[in-house]
Image (cartoon, rainbow, N blue to C red; front, top):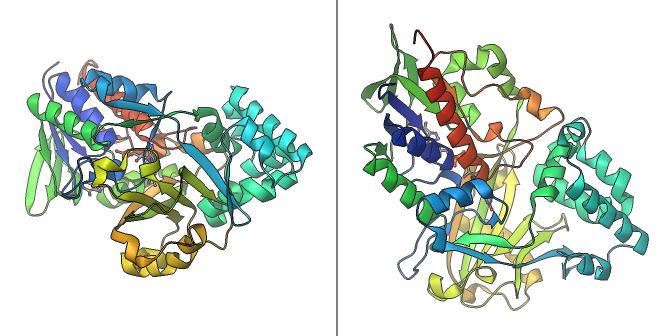
Length: 436
Ligand SMILES: Cc1cc2nc3c(=O)[nH]c(=O)nc-3n(C[C@H](O)[C@H](O)[C@H](O)COP(=O)(O)OP(=O)(O)OC[C@H]3O[C@@H](n4cnc5c(N)ncnc54)[C@H](O)[C@@H]3O)c2cc1C
């Protein structure tokens, strides 16, 4: 096998992991990333007075996220892993109720004893049931009502599912819901310095192995060369490669390579809808949430789905002593929040943040940040796995591996790492085929 010239489009966890594996195997890797920074949806930023980077969108790992944890170890970052058990609560009738253990479920005032028992049965079933494929044939709504009952559905699950997926909620597959419950661990992991620590280590390894990383470089077209290989165009530059791996969201893939939207099984990807993610982050002098890390908001009159107090998970000393709280939403294309400035969004959210903490006022806000991740959430409807084609596309030498390829699990950096490795393996196995 000789060293191929491989272009990877996208410098998120999938692209970086694939690039690392391919560079380790002796290929000449070039990663193109449109943003000035790497990390994609898991990218982190750092203010001057902070020691650590913070992700634009709240991030943590589960203790069973073995693919990324193995990679972290391989990169020599084993001692950077932090494991802790933060508090998860649910906002119900204006009050926060811790709801992250059987004991807390028993104490939760929003459900009758029968519904508590049925909820425990539902959660126990989802934790133990191994045959997710069977659940892909029914909706989450049907499964939850059948086992957990109507009261728990209306009080807890319906507001969360509809809050996240809006009009798509009635079509969400039970397998997606299964994955969310089956995979959760009570303890969570974070990385000393933020996910940026892993991104930085990965990019350093790729460069040390002879790879090239072009940040702030938007690829505008991927075209086939006459005899063999591809041209990648960015700005006025055109570069030639033997193979190309696309790790960018499907709607962007189709605009770069329109023929893929018409080719074989890959055209089924057009049937997958996506939501955009938006977060407003407040750096405050006083905490907005006390003790609680993750607050699920079941009151649908609130303009956000979750409030996530990062500094009730990690120590505020590494962020200049400020308390950091995210307010997050998943939004359909064209939603009015997506065209708002962070000040406009804050004005919209402020009355509800005050309801969470009546002592909240604009004087305690030291800074604010807004982050939008486009196409950040593929919508897992019934039969989702059947819509996902091979990583190798019908165009020889062109490969696709993005978040849509992750199932039954909800997308996450752990799966981006395993997908990046799979993509690299797929590309390398095709290189060693005879007559190629
Ligand atoms: C709100 C939110 C919370 C999350 N929470 C967690 C969590 O707690 N734990 C966890 O593990 N995961 C979490 N995730 C998911 C995780 O961030 C993603 O699964 C993972 O980062 C996806 O990596 P990726 O490389 O597949 O895609 P992306 O990160 O989307 O990378 C694709 C890259 O392609 C680039 N790109 C796009 N178009 C072009 C172009 N034309 N030319 C060049 N580059 C281009 C983009 O800028 C981007 O950097 C969360 C995501 C969101 C949105």
